[in-house]
Image (cartoon, rainbow, N blue to C red; front, side, top):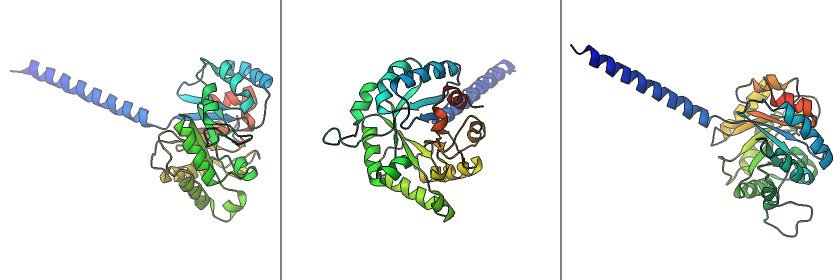
Length: 272
Ligand code: PGA
């Protein structure tokens, strides 16, 4: 009678199965897209105003869910002040543009090493306002993405359609084209994509969360790395963030207007 032996074997098997399941869960967690909430301050806030914002904002997010990455993409002039004030807070720092050259005669531009020296980790590239007002093309977006990555910055690539393109049924084509051209030679292991329908930016006219979820699913389908974090951007605010973040394809938000005020941006970061 080997009852004792069988019990031991069963215990061993149960233990092994448990460890195996635990391993599977850990693998799944480590390959899931990160949740990233980024504020895009655009051309707002002096250094003094930036400091003022941080005092309130940082206290309001002190007990946030640590699995959510928080990033502040501030004007170049505020980067250093914000960097110093973010020390030890776990909040990431982002710029809103970067040039592709290492240095040189590019008046008004900023290089990647100028950013990394200050402690910048993220950079928004190809925002629709840069495409619309400053002649940004898929080609220059691509150059900026590659240079950012070369310097260890994580680019947040913005894509999105105009109202006219949406009405003409061109949404998918436009976005797929932006992705195809923008991502040539880009490492998808160090990339965030933001789907920002242009008609929803700064208008209060948020894209229906189910529609944003659908388009983001299509964007994921175009990517080689399915674990890229894909954010939604366009009139995200404290009242609609919970519904947006409940969508399965959406891994975060790129927030403009509502990131300028500590209380509203903290509520967004602390979404439920
Ligand atoms: P908004 O801007 O939240 O003010 O619409 C978003 C963005 O442009 O990134």
